[in-house]
Length: 134
Image (cartoon, rainbow, N blue to C red; front, side, top):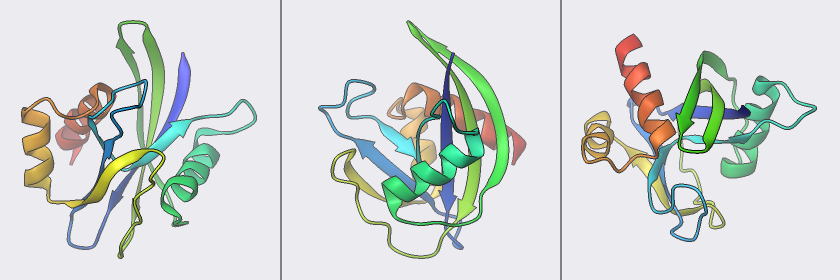
């Protein structure tokens, strides 16, 4: 299982930071992800990886709150997602290497992406679990 650290970023208005993956990405091209994230390196804890990924992809360093972890299987993809949450009030620059587009979206807009099947599969599972708990 590949360990993944991911961070849900929420602003004070309750909007979520969402990014559309570049169409050239090998995994989930053109689909939408919530927040930021990536692989946990061998020498890292999930929390340290989350802080690193958050800073690398968004340039922000804010306190992280652990949410929950779950195993994700999709074809030959087997990973353990470790999700965290943070709050940030401001513009987050688009990470050109990773994302075609990024911005804040309302929960209703993210719900629409989920309903239309436009979220990355692991993000969709996270979002479903997150909404059940909140």
